[in-house]
Length: 369
Image (tube, rainbow, N blue to C red):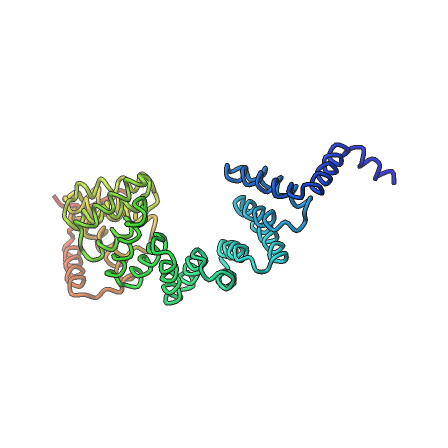
């Protein structure tokens, strides 16, 4: 009894406030919803803790306020507390098992946890309760794609854009999926629709650029990569994409510039170092080429192409032993036995047997003038 009295004394203001709120609510019957709305105001401004505080007040007044549980779940989800988010969504479903949004939100949490089958189940329940729920089809399509069930993913993306023909993200993801499975014409059609319905779709431009690149239509790929860069100047993949398009056109100075920018934004991108090295190789700067191939191999020791390219640059500067070592490493990684490979291998062996070796720092060998 003494502990109870002490608790009441130390929390008297809170108890009085709650009593006032309960009395007020009993007369006006909507204060819990007012608290939900106040929580949404804080949520929209990114203040999730304050939002949760008001959702808690709403549930103190009405323990069956569905929206308080759903909104609190979303706030916890944005804070990264997926366990609490699920607990709130579960309670919301217990209160109203017919509310499609709650199943959708629970699917999002499962997807963030990497539980694709559970996510698909929840999106399906959401669709059962609301057959016109575009985002449920879209997210279920993403989950099917991650599960490598491409036909079902395509069907869901198609349903999403059927319901909403202006749904840019639906066209975007279907276009990317078509590209992944090799249907470049359909991919281009969808990505163009994504851009048509959202001119700010950076990924629409980027992925359409990739599709044009894969069709060897470099003059169309380059403007799309440039638009992607305009919309997001820090998107390193767009610089890399434009760089490889310039490389294929033989415009090596612009390719070099884009690969350098790629590495400025992401300095551990092995492929960018490899392409930077190959660009230097094309303009006969084998020393810088070797440096960049070394960086590429350091980041990705299994990059067969980097070893082959470095082998050729070593050959060009007459470091035949190092060239041979790289060529043999390339063979072990790629299992290449082509005629070009065999001829290059025989040439290197013949030069080494003749004693035509250069010395590099840290190694010994004969030197010829």
